[in-house]
Length: 519
Image (cartoon, rainbow, N blue to C red):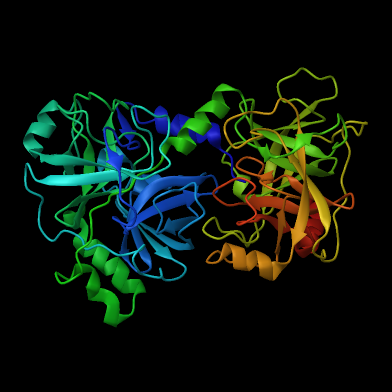
């Protein structure tokens, strides 16, 4: 699964200088169940990444900065207060409409619409909320909410909400050390202990039952006693753009419901990007492993998986892969980066100085031409190395499996990293048994996320077992041959309710052969 932990973390915590994207709810309280049914968890391969708000039955409004080029948003979860529970509706993102003038949060226009692949089943647990049709009033009482950290706990499994007030815009601009964009609202986080912090990005600021703002940024990640107010994108200034964008994709008879004054009034609940994921990423970076985790597995015997490759960025593991020719590694297309990978072969421990290791540069990448980071299909890529590997006991090729696998076949996958879905890092290569799941059963469990015939699903032999963020690109091995490439999994690592999904290699043998022949 996608694992650019270090790059993401550095980007979030360092690249913005004085400002930091929103994240935890400070001095809040647990939100009553179903009290904020418009709340949306916007997710990547890693799980929850940003907040969002359901403004139409197939459109979510969030912040533009939530979309990272190497960390694309994949699906949303609607209708749950607890992100650790397997509740709510999981719906794939079909298309992203980032505001055309957005460059970075400092410049404003930090707003984006997400078109969903199917309509949300509206009810008590999932509801749309109208957008504000007038400017917010100074001193007006509003609410912001999220699933992130509190001051007393490292993480909060339950949605938490806090009351804050709109701050005078001129007063806000006077106390901020940098010029603020013209399209923002200030609320909370100033002369108070209440507000948001890193991770609540994209969640709504709700005043009087309407969405007034979207969480954008605060000052230097200071959350408890900040000197500058929290900053939100002013939704009112984008009503025309929102309406035109939704109208472009929506049947005429449902276009105007978003702006109706007669909508059923609902409780106020803004949402947030949880720092559960952020803290886990921090643990991974500090311990020197950006990626892969095998949950519920075991130590692999040294040199027992000699085809395994570690794709690294500045010495940090990012994705897995398999050596299919002396100078080619097979991995996932979503692992592609702009720069060059360092490819390490023959390793058992990524930190130990092992004589069996061989190190190369990936000089060219060949993602499948049909891969689109907004979709899950064709998630396969070949990497050309700068030299040919020397085949030894610790470095060997793996063959590619032909034909379809029958469920319930027995296979295996492996990777380096978190072994318990809690930040406990492996010191050696881990492996876990995988049972192939029938396509129809897999699709039923994934519900709104399409499972194509070019994919294969697997679950552990029992309990919580499987891969998770960072094992991306590693091989699913069946009968000694590579049958799949780690692609994506659910919110909880190894949970059989959302089976692990691999790219089916047999569907791409001809493409693989063509690339190898021509290069």
